[in-house]
Image (cartoon, rainbow, N blue to C red; front, side):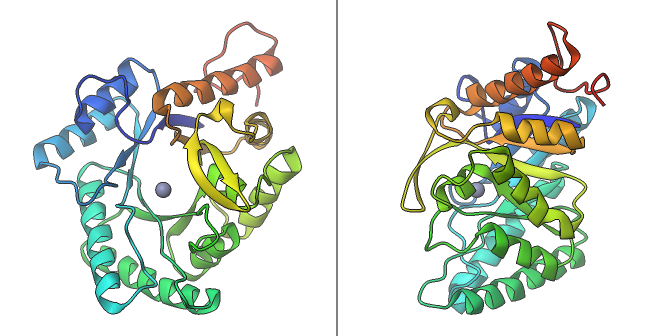
Length: 290
Ligand SMILES: [Zn+2]
C-alpha cells in the first residue's frame, strides 16, 4: 500500500482550516494521506473539527498524522523538558481525537552534552511520554524524526536506537534531512537500501517517509526546496518500495507542498507503468505488479 499526502493544508486550498485542507487533499488532489501541522506553537482545534477530521478520514480512507510543535527539547533542562512533554502530550490528545495514527516529533538538541548523554536523556523522556500516553489511553504512536543538522540530535542511527529502547515508538524517515546530514548521501539505489537495511531490526510494518528537496552544505540543511530543484532522486526509493511491496506513507514537506505530493504520485505511477507496460496507473493499485 502506498499513501501520499501533504504536510499541512495545501497552499492552493482557499479554506485555511485543517478540515478544509483534508477535504481538498482527498477530493481535489486525489491523495490519501495528510500530516496535520501543529508546528507553530500550540494549535487549538475544536472538538467538532477533530471529530469531522476523524469521520471524514475514516469514510474516505485518508491516513492522518500530526506533527508536534518544532520547538521541543527532550534533552534540555527540567523546565524545557516539562514544557516539551506538555506540547507533545497536547498534540497527541488532539491527534487521538482526530483518529490520527501518529504524532511526529523532533527529539531535541545536544547542546554541550555528549551524544551519549543526550541519547540517555531523550530515551528517558520518551519512555515517560509513552507511559503518559498509556495512562490516558491514547493510542497514537510517537514518531521520532531524523534531523538534518549536525548540532541537532537525530541521525538515522540515533533515531533507530531510541526505537530499540522504547516500545511502540517508530522512526520517521526524513529523506531530505538524511540527505543533508550525510552531505548528499542519498543518490544511488544502494544509498536508500542502506536505510531499509538499518531499519530491519525494528521489524516495521509501515514506513512514514518525509520527502522534500533540500539545500545543504557541510552536512547541514539550510532550506527545504522543491523536489526537482534538489539533488536527491526519488526513482531509486520508489523502485525499492515496489520491489519489496513495502507499506509506506509519503508526506511532502516541500515548499511546493501539494504540488510535490502530486509529483511523488506521478513518479510512483510512472514506475508502475514501466512495470505493467500500460499507459495508465493508479498509485493505490499495485495488484498488477505484485
Ligand atoms: Zn519534522
